[in-house]
Image (tube, rainbow over all chains, first blue to last red):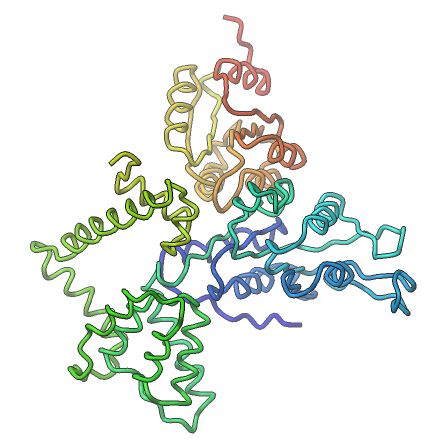
Length: 351
Length: 128
């Protein structure tokens, strides 16, 4: 039984909304599709759904649909009868059977082949499946939670994903935004893992980072999301050298040079030595906000940001003949966010 | 008689909600609107005494889809009539029927025809 619940950490609106959504749907058993980039915590959300549901006393079975070749995945999911193929010496139960009355978590569903998608659709429609080499149909009562980091809508257009399966999985959709779109979640997540690993690596006396370093962590785009942040803290526990850890982050090949340059601009030796800065940082930004209402740095910042954003987005869109899904990938924001920004910033094709 | 009938309309398009609101108001219904499944659930639960007679919901919406919404509220409000509408082909419509929507309509919608369907569903005598 794995219902020890790891918390979903975050203070951003999107995370609060996800928590609310989980509390609404955990008891319904409705099919759920969790989307988001690698490392945003899709597993964690699936686990929380399971742990808050009446199925928590039964199994949580995870299958990674990208990790296995088609035939193996098929026998993994549905099991097989003795003699179904060479080497099938005895009957084998599949994951659908193992997850009966519990949860079947299908990770990377976007990588499932079309023929397996049809079989999956059949199970979802009828609640029945037959193991390989068997003509017998078995009843199954599983709660299917699927996850993907692909844009399934795009895969449907390219005929790589069945539309009917998509709608059947997408009864409830939980879209987890990447960490860089919710930097306010970085401090509490950092705090959580720092405490966790401090306890684990108790012999290493690692101090919390200086304010300066922490600002870098806040500005870093975290392409690997929470998993990358987690690994970075783990690394620090071993190396105890923030400069080295941050340098390693910047050597990540997916990070663009503009970001690297942006980082090198930050003064390195100008430490403002405030201790226990984490909570201070949050309070500080709040109090400063109320003090300078009249000058409204916030407003100026917003205007400047909007201007740059508008220019960058217009430029990328014009280069891509307004292919918005491609543009969203290049800009590393979700498709939805891009549409929202196009609307909000009033970006038009004929400028 | 129509004026005593309460309709809740759920759609993630603000424009459509406004259109629906104006139209059904002008036809004499009491209309409430919600931009997503969350708000719809809240409205339904907070109005359990002065309850709604009809829910009209879009099917393809972020987070809680129309099908999800229908499934959740069918259990809580078995007497509530439900019309599902979609502009995304037949698939969502099939799911809505499975979830026991009373009627599925495909966009673009003919509002006058829709109103006739509603009157029939709510058993309103439309003869004037």
